[in-house]
Figure 1: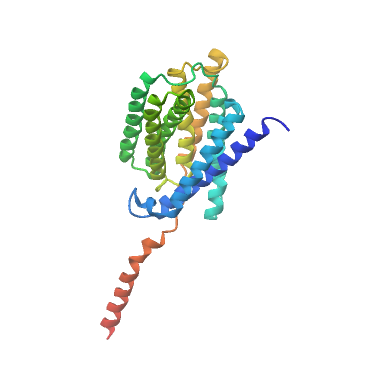
Figure 2: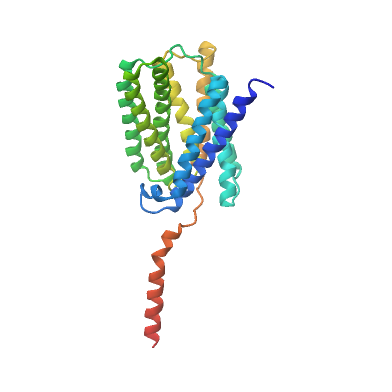
Length: 302
């Protein structure tokens, strides 16, 4: 048996778990009233959290058995799996534009990640962590606040998804640092790093949930899938000394791959999201009104 078979299978199952979680999140966001905290009262949302945890665990396990250059690009298959899952659950076709945008985003992201060279540093310098944490929180907050200026629901969702991608990407960076602290016995740095990881991961989860409200599934998921590893790669290049493969040629190819991924996100952002069926709680308040109207009409006839 090929030594790469196990990490490939783990990546595929991880991508399916992430995709299923995204589909559930989008349905909960589209059918739940009560503002941003409304989904927290739905069991389906907590099921999505469990699926996300399963996907994350399988992804980490795949990294333990396979090379980063293989595992990371396969993670981009999440959006490809999510589109047919969403189509089946909503009983509607994906459409040519949806597939085209998903494939462009996936191909560009896979190309970008495959060009990322090996790391030159194992973990973050403890002195750099407070500054990086502040920049990550500030960047996600600025994007989240800027989303309120967007007039179109899809654009609003994409900007929120970008904020979620920033949070998730930086959470991955701090997760790796926390793991290095734990294995090397540097507990004095582990507590702070783990706390930052938890805050960023929770913030990313809430932002991604909010991004699906009114924006559909494809555009927000493509944005998160693209921004997340791009942010992690940017930190690796600027802070950890990582470089692109093949020198200047690799850098130019990385720019081209990023352009392709951006084109895919733009294609998905132009799709009109289908209107979801209302949650039963949305209609309960209309029943008394209908009955009052019927009673009023009957009384008028009498």
